Image (tube, rainbow, N blue to C red):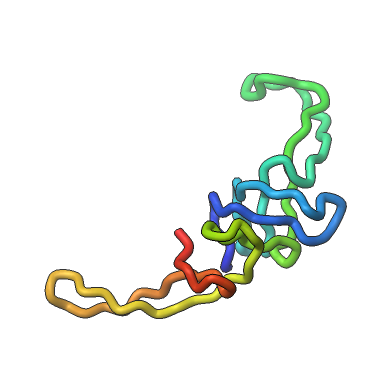
Length: 110
């Protein structure tokens, strides 16, 4: 999955199109992510010892990965994500590392 936790993303489709937020959770088996302040749903929660608050609680619901784009850090615009193989020297041995990059700026994503 090309989108990771703590990435800044832009929602491209749906009722929250145009909103930006940070990825809170990633669900690779469902190809979905949860983003702060996006796709907010109301849940009726019954009181129990583990729950601090009961009643109607608003929380973000998962949204499909196909409906979001990663925001590039340098130009603050949405971009597709690609991969690049980078050679590194660690302790005298050469290794190849796979890193995520923005397709528009070719910069490395954290």
